[in-house]
Image (tube, rainbow, N blue to C red; front, side, top):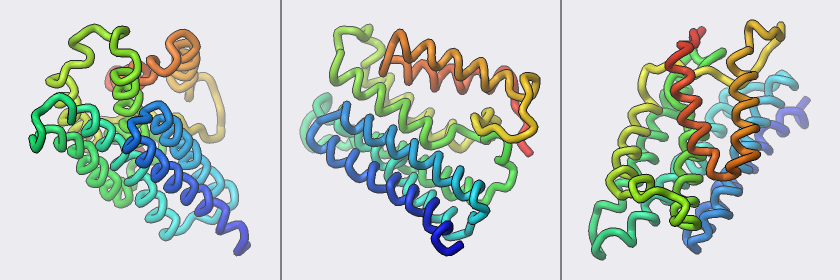
Length: 232
């Protein structure tokens, strides 16, 4: 049993380690690698909770470790990605690029709130930090790597800064968003939204690859607003 307790925490540490490597990649302007490591960290983040439930070893320590790891992988990293993207767009010593870390502040507040909120078992309230991190990292990666594929307004500084502020609000707003976690009993009626969304996401990724991620996150939020999932 003692060994079983180490399994979920080991995945949490892998999440944290992935976020740290992602930060190093950003300092070297390797946005693709940063996106890869953050995505890997989010993969590990899913499995720490999965194994905690499977092995019946959930603990207050594990909950705190999970949020601390998410703070780096899904909080600091996207904020830094936006900050680095904006640095070249303002004069030196300007404070405006550092507003990218509003994402980090919003993520911190959400993670603390999430630990105290008992309503988010079958749905989320506010945008989860991993989804927000994937949105910004994939967007900044596409701006850096394939600027000619984007219409000018999609990479505009004003839009980025507006979305930074909006994301901090959406993460902490009282907006119910459906969860992709499934629990028995399984049925089409119970999980049709999740199934259709996953099929859409797979098709979108097949055609657009990394460019699909911001679209998928936006569709996720808009779908949740339309279907209005109930939190328990």
